[in-house]
Length: 149
Image (cartoon, rainbow, N blue to C red; front, side):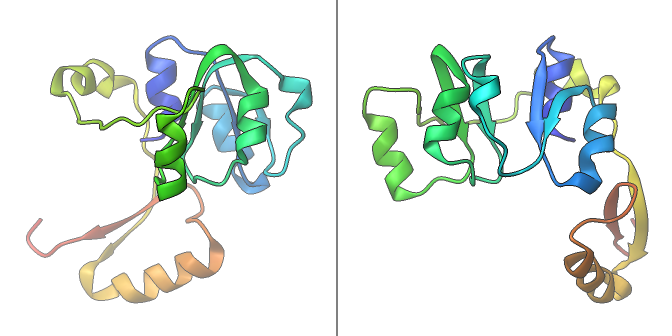
């Protein structure tokens, strides 16, 4: 499931960035506004309590511009430099997460996971090659079915 779905299920307002082909899906998930990669953060300055950078590509200055005072930046792509930055005063925090069954069960019925295509394991390599070429399956996720599953 998309992180925006978890946040919306907990009552958060969610803004996000994505490639143009994914903008409609982001809107359907309740993301507003949706901006493209490389956006100018100035119009959205100090609007967010939390900036979640799932690809780990948002420049630190842009993330900091988006934050309200006292906000937090969460980057799920740890690097040594980011870990050092988290030890310094500021919005970066180092943390370890673990799934909590009760939390997941609480939002499970509100999540939507569209499946674009299901292929058997024997067809996984061609399907993944096609996915890499197109960057994303059209209409949802690619599911690889295991024999007997």
